[in-house]
Structures are given as C-alpha cells and as structure tokens.
Amino acid sequence: MGWRFKWVSSFANHFNFDCHVSFTKDEMAKGQVYYNYAMTEFGSEEAGGVSVFYKDETGDIFHTYSSYARGLDMLHGAYNYLDLVPKGRDEDGLTFTMARVRHHDRYSNGDVDPKAPYSPPKGSICSHGPVEDHA
Amino acid sequence: MKTIETPMPGRKVVSREQWLEARKAHLAKEKELTRLRDELSRQRRELPWVKVEKNYVFDGPNGKETLADLFDGRSQLIVYHFMFGPGWEEGCPSCSFLCDHIDGASSICTRGT
Image 1 (cartoon, each protein chain N blue to C red):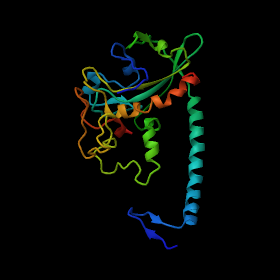
Image 2 (cartoon, chains in turn brown, purple):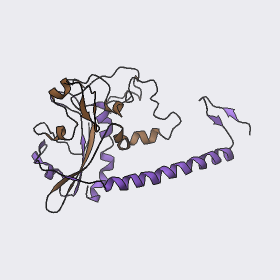
Image 3 (spheres, rainbow over the protein chains, first blue to last red):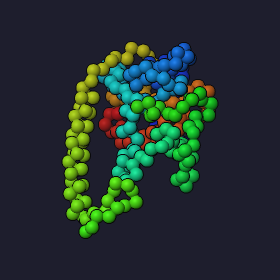
C-alpha cells in the first residue's frame, strides 16, 4: 500500500486480545464480545482501535489510553475535510457509514458504488459493516 | 439582495454581509468546541496509567521485536490495531483508510512519539 510506518504482527502473542480488538472463537460463539468498553454484538473476529503506551527511563511500560469505533474519528484526516463542505460526509442512506471507503489503490476515477453491500476482506469472516458502525 | 434558494434544501444564497454575520455566529461555536476539545485532551492526558506486565513479542520486518523495541528509542508509542486476522488475504478497507493518514503525521517522531 506504499505506507512507510512500521507494521508488526501480534499473531504470536495475546496483545490484541488484551487490547480488546481480537476475539476468541469462544467469545464469538457466545454472540457478544467486549469492545469499546461494553459487551456488544460483533460480527468479526477482529476490530479496529488505537492504543497508547509510555515507557519511562527505567524501561517500565504503561498503557495510558485506548479508543475504538467513532473514537477513532479524529485520526481520519479526510473526514475533517469533508466536514467543511456542504454535503459533509454524505453518509445518509448508505448500508454502513464507511461504504465509500476502499483500499486506496481501488478508487477508479474517484467513483465507488456506495450502495454496494459490505465486501469483507478476502479470507475474513466479517459478516457486517466495519466497526465504525458500532459507535 | 433578495434571498434565493440553492439546489440544496434549507440552504440559501444571501448577501456577503448576511453571510458574514452567520459565519461569525458559527465561529463562536467553533471556538467553544476548540476550547472544549483542548480541555478534554488535557483531561485525557491526566488519566491514570496501567503498568504493562506481559512481555509481548511481535513479528516485524526486523524479526522478533518486543513492545519496548517498538518505542524505537522514544518514550511514547501509538499503536493502531489493524484488522488483518489469521488467514485473511487482505486487510480491512476501513483500517486501510485510517492508515492512509498515518505517514502524514510522521513529524510526531520529533516529539518523542
């Protein structure tokens, strides 16, 4: 995707489960998971979120903050631009709020079909729109 | 100048003077939000912390890296949890949209982050 920021995988550890953004098969089977500080129905084994840590001079690490769902709004610079124009985010009537969002190399001439049903990432088990609908 | 309708319901075309009056009234609300957000951010910074007791080890381009390694010599670390589960052939489009904004914020590395 051309990004320069650092990527790491948490596959081998419990980090994303401890941060409440990955859910076990048992949790999924129960129909509700703990996400965004509450039990909620959720159709994916994975959820989005941001977490902040501080490391002091002795090397001790502290978790200071986590946010999810609409709490991530301010990290989307594009939304701040759209909030300036008459049509705004223009999400009324969409099947889910991020229905216009694609991987950035998949916009053709700036047009997408916002009425298209949610297309989950290939190989995933997402059964519904993305997490931003769980504000 | 006569007020006329625009193609958008509820929006009107007015004189520059009328526009300026409405814009200034909205500016007052924007300033209120700015100050409220500053205050909310101050309160966020004062939230209590929890010590991380586990030694998380991640797999990255440099091999195994601990959570401490990810700080890369700095004191503050922001992690975005990208939805890309085991067996997925591609990552989540919405997470991808969010991550399109990260590199543009790279100057935060000069602020210990």
